Amino acid sequence: MSGATIIDGKAFAAGLRARIAEAVPAFSSATGRVPGLAVVLVGDDAASAVYVASKGKATVAAGMASFEHRLPADTKQEELIALVRQLNADESVDGILVQLPLPKHLDEQAVVDAISPEKDVDGLTPISTGRLALGLPGLVPCTPLGSLMLLKDHIGDLSGKDAIVIGRSILVGKPMAQLLLAENCTVTIAHSRTRDLKARVQQADIVVAAVGRAEMVKGDWLKPGAVVIDVGINRLDPAEGETKGRLVGDVDYASALELASAITPVPGGVGPMTIACLLRNTLVAAHRRAGLADPEGL
Ligand SMILES: Nc1nc(=O)c2c([nH]1)NC[C@@H]1CN(c3ccc(C(=O)N[C@@H](CCC(=O)O)C(=O)O)cc3)C=[N+]21
Image (cartoon, rainbow, N blue to C red):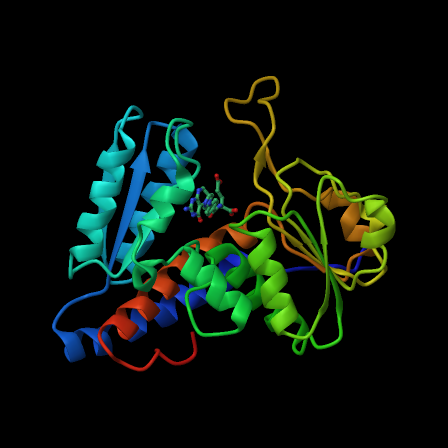
């Protein structure tokens, strides 16, 4: 018997996107233009192309301008940085996202560092990561921001909760830990060298799994009543008769339902929140660049 609540990220994200769309007209009447998001995709990875297309669709649906730049896989570092600089200088662009990972011959950090911090809607530049660590206002990476929104919506005050973040990536694990710390959680950051992960997960009221390994976190590791945020999006090898493999998270969902009090599903959990938060960050960046107060309630 499982009484776990399924946290509906898809529905929450739809609501957030509707609130963003409602806030766009006020920005437009104040500035005479719409917020703009530029997405840069290098190479022809099929999954990346799908994400970029859905980001573009969501951007336009929210009443914003979407600028897509697709570059060939053999694009040179200087060419990519030149494009980023051009987007930095473009007044109609408020947010710049360079889809990661980049092809191996490109220096990801150097490319990200070229993004103007005021347009850094992915929250990856040293200025953004530094401001988050310092507790100063800035732009926060979309996946952790969306995960935190779901946690606060479900739990309310997070103060004093024991949280474990499994994974220490720049895009998810580290900023997630910072956000939880800022909410007064006691935060453990676990990673591939962590000893006895199960015992540490068993202590946690909040578990954020962001390791990128299919169904790695088992349900019987959980403390009864734990709230689980599953950031993983792993496509299993296609089974007999299927063209696409099944999408699963980093948590063994079926067994987690037994002990968790709430859990985000994959798909339909954190993924849709990432895209909604990208629009949120673009709208916020647009307001700040225009010298306007941050939009309320986002
Ligand atoms: N600079 C950068 N920033 C990113 O934020 C970034 C990136 N690079 N590279 C790739 C990953 C991946 N990513 C996803 C966003 C939404 C879904 C999403 O909406 N997923 C749906 C289902 C997707 C499906 O069915 O394939 C869901 O979970 O319900 C997934 C993945 C953002 N990423």
